[in-house]
Figure 1 (spheres, rainbow, N blue to C red):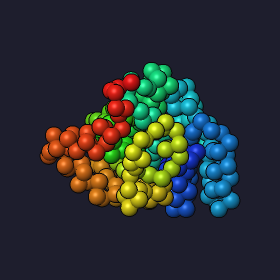
Figure 2 (cartoon, rainbow, N blue to C red):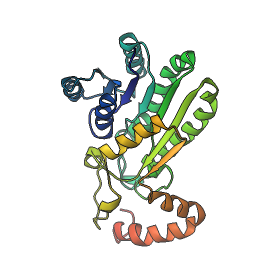
Figure 3 (cartoon, one colour):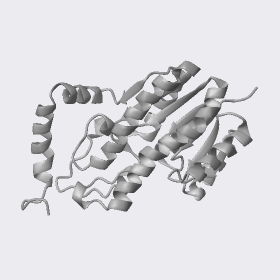
Figure 4 (cartoon, one colour):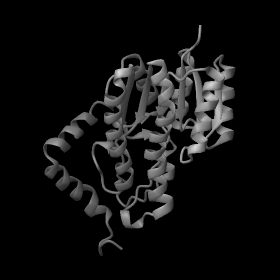
Length: 269
């Protein structure tokens, strides 16, 4: 009689919120984790008004004690966690020498990579005991192709990709699925916090830009039909293969289309 349970980090907006709404509509109980308590409670009220059930747990995933409280509260409330969606993350997209060591570099590493690793580590014993579960890590095309100004963000997402692959080979013997999802540009609040200052105005073309709801539907499809990795939208797979097969050509193209045009004319300063 129990409904399945999904725990979503970064649930207060964007992809996390859209995923919570969709999974609730599909019969899941949802645990909502993020730092912004007011938004979590508003989303939980919205889900419950629509007939679902949501548990908001204010959480800073850079803090282990918060993560432990999140998982303990989820299990005390629902008794199980069927899906963990490690979605929390942000990007500061500037030239490396312009990034603040603490607020831009360290915080990205702590949130995007360490937070996902520690959350998984705390949830994992429960899934191993049940011999079931699905862990989905929100990576990025920037975890497959490293663009300029994405140096730290890409480092976190490349790291998450390696973590996902290794973890899959560790826990598959217990019936636990591990998947990575690699979207291109998504129309969310992400861009409001990146600090991007583009001289050229270059951005992801509209026909390749996803909505938060598009990504949420693909997360649900991953749960219904598990696979190791999912690159969306599909044309991005071409870019990934070009980067694998002809990295020198990609270097040349990006430098001329983007880097030379974006860098100040007198050099790095």
